[in-house]
Length: 185
Image 1 (cartoon, one colour):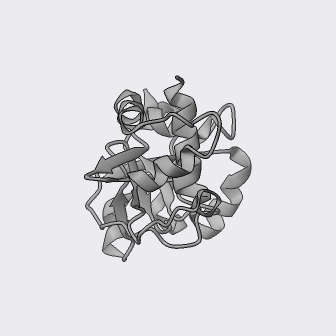
Image 2 (cartoon, rainbow, N blue to C red):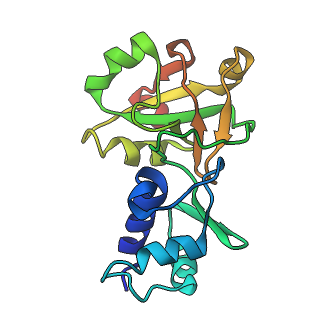
């Protein structure tokens, strides 16, 4: 079994299209594992998937996209569903990072970072992760440094997505700075 493929299927169901699976997420994004398994069992590919497979999928994942608590499962971040998944505000490190494509920079400088089709802006704790994320959009991405202390002081909320991903509703441009190449040395 491909746990990567299963993770992508579960992510799609929990982050983007729960209605396609007839899943009902609560306000925190949780859904009953039985309900998810029942939905997956409707397909040929996932007909025999079990709770233990979901557990292995989570345990073997480097990115920690999902979590199980009791008899429920949820995606930790990346939601594009219309309902707002409630996150608890947390205090981030002094600086967070966001990798993006060069062509987005003029818009970001004007309007700041916004969630676009997602519910939150995704931020990284380290430059390397931000660079990997940015490389999905640009071979040589721009890395933005977010001054979280000043942003928080002016009312920006940050939320913990997982141990490497932080979330925010939006980040005004005055709290962003482009990381210069010499800054990474």
